[in-house]
Image (cartoon, rainbow, N blue to C red; front, side, top):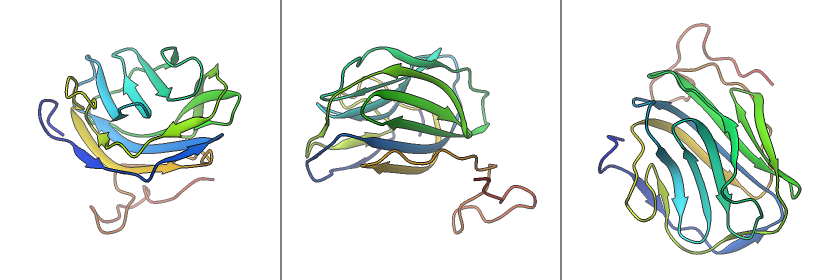
Length: 166
């Protein structure tokens, strides 16, 4: 993702859920500016504001509150987890909870395109690499994946960096 024009996109089946989990493995090339990680019109959104991680979920309260301060290091891999359990949105980085905000409601995920690495309006792009994305109708168990090379078939294994700590 080059920060100006590259992104991925998929269109989900419309659904609602009282709980949600988003897990993203990424590294930032630019750590000083606001960047969108995933975005969907009238749906789900996860962004780096330049100083914080923020998520808005359609149908869920507290959409514009910063969830956690975050200062990424350029070219360092991170496993970022957003969990929503019906009472709060929480952000975990590399298996450690770094913040949460109160939130209630039912998440609405419409059948609109979900943009990976781009704001749905095209106004903001992610500058870095995204290796993995999972969106689930349940909070995922945040865990630490020592990175940079964890996934078989992408970059292969590297010694002492391939263990998943649960």
